[in-house]
Amino acid sequence: MVDHADGENVNQVVDNGKGFDDTPGFELPLLLFGAFRTLIDRLHARLAEEGHPGLRPAYGFAMQAIGTHGATASDIGRRLGVSKQAAGKTVDRLLALGYAERTDDPGDARRKLVRLTPHGRAALARSAVVFDELRAEWAAVLGAERVREIETALRSVVPAETAFRLDATSWLGGS
Image (cartoon, rainbow, N blue to C red):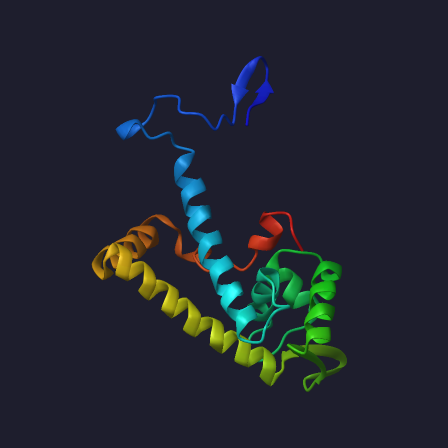
């Protein structure tokens, strides 16, 4: 993939021979993203086999944004980095699939909260178990100590305030 700007090639996904160990810099984010995609895709394949065939990655982010106490559509949109309307569309899908429900806000009768249903909480609980199993699979291949070292190394370069951000869907252009 090559983009041209001011007569120069930019964003080249080719080996330019620069960098330490002759590894081009663009490989690191691609490998990290590939690892992320591999884990998420395997998680959703397992969840589909276990009774959650309609659950998509964006829905998992939204369910995390809803949290244990519920949230308004505006709150969900803000946490995901998407518009209230985009959050509302995702919430509507979660409602249709039975993962969430709308309830009155006990603190403000004018507001509606989105809360996870028992089905939604069960899906999140199951995804936590599957993530632990996938991590164990990585440990079986790479070694437990190496997996811990990778996690520690990533914690040292990823700012704490962005380590667990939920707004990946907006960053990647989805809703």
